[in-house]
Image 1: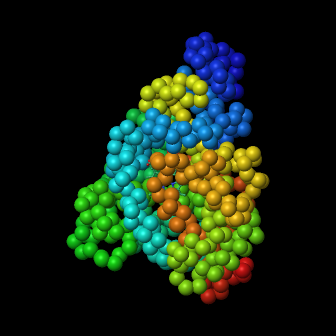
Image 2: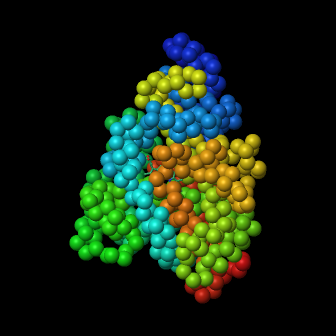
Image 3: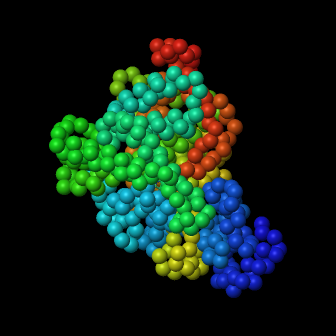
Length: 472
Ligand code: HEM
């Protein structure tokens, strides 16, 4: 809480601005407004604390500018889902990631401009996308199994780094049909670091420089996909099931560069968020051995023969583990909107450009809605649990809500389930500590820190010298 002098100064200079917002609860503003609350703790923890202390809507002050933090499902639906959603554009994130992604991705498009047109072009939104998705299970399983074999040889793993690369490789197989050279992964990371520096900057963006070699890495990264698109046009593979081949067959008129940008965008859309979710899942499974044993049993059954989409769809425990991980430790916990013109919301008139922060952390752990919300209980998703709290509903929206929710949500679910099944069948992902891990922030996504451990082979033939465990 700002001291008396700081609060007095705010009131002296901006007191008259407070009157129209008097009906809304919130922390006392000081000279920085209430922005000081966000200097230190992670923004999702601040938003969740506001939810507990002030309820569904909290008035905040970014310096002299008012804003709100929403923790109320009805207000969140009004901003993200109702016809009124057209009044609210994405917040600063669009400008922050702009140098890294391209104008062809829907991520930074404006609702009032070409967002709808871009969304229609998204490969994951096509009538054929579900068929493409179903065909990814087997190739991703093979790619993940190879990564697991390599990771088994490591005496110690930093799970965030290891699963990030495993995820990147599986995404590459789904996107272009094979793993990509390490140099492409390095370029991908450098471009992400550039965006991250802008997201985390405390200074105006014009003072934030991009990392050395950024422009060259960008040319190489998207150029790599452009080369692949041109090569695929020249020598089409009629039976290939990757996104590139499928897109060219179904939408041959798409421009090479647009397709290259969309393929590259898949990695920015989902590698960090999906791998963070897996780290959270394995951390919780270490803490809840019964849940882990059930995962091992189900994964072992699925491992008999090739994994298919149908088999995966019947694996209820694996789905429940994925859902519970997305509930308790959602990888994307805060997103923002801003009214493009003055807009009435929560009984006040928010000026154009003001900050609306939406977080899922508080609602995902709301004790009025969930039993033992801080516990990891996949069983809550069985026996109608998924239908009670479907993705994108009031208390469960790890992929956002409404028409602008995650374009890759269905793909992310299939990836997560394939990864849990494939890793769970082969190894016990041992995590050294079940104490809550430190949460950092990278590229707008939660970054688990210090989660170490190792893979322990479940079967001696996969062990390559490591001790076997039998959990089934
Ligand atoms: C566990 C994994 C993932 C999580 C937790 C996640 C989360 C989210 C959330 C919360 C949003 C909405 C943000 C907002 O409303 O401002 C979003 C949007 C988006 N996501 Fe994901 N995402 C994941 C995976 C993916 C994947 C695999 C892709 C790949 C295509 C992807 C691409 C996108 C795009 C392009 C948008 C913007 C959609 C639009 O503006 O219309 N995401 N994601």
